Image 1 (tube, protein in one colour):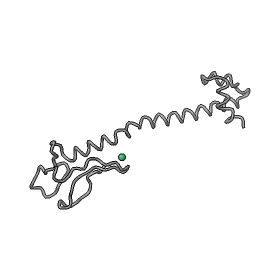
Image 2 (cartoon, rainbow, N blue to C red):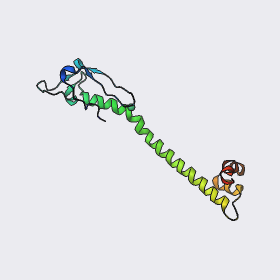
Image 3 (spheres, rainbow, N blue to C red):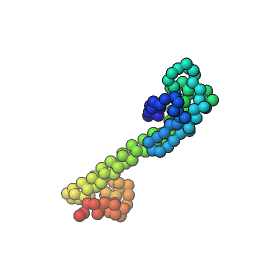
Image 4 (tube, rainbow, N blue to C red):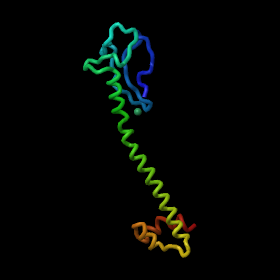
Length: 132
Ligand SMILES: [Zn+2]
């Protein structure tokens, strides 16, 4: 996150806006909307530029940015659960193949019961993968 890491001469500043690599753009604050809390400062920093509501540009930009990326953070748990589910499915496939290759092989009835599904469902799901 580096929304304000650009140096631009004061005379060229027309406003401020936080943008994202995905194309999202936050509110554009025009230069005349913000006042420097240190009028003698030569440089303009977002943490010193006050908006009419009293917040700084830095805080306002960070708040919008956080709101924008919050859903991405929330999907981390979904991503982790999907990974776990994929690994569990692969382990289940491997266990079924092992059971079918044992001597004597487990029946589809036994495998279905162990997996909590019917004999037919077990056969439909794994027969093509195991018996080729
Ligand atoms: Zn984005």
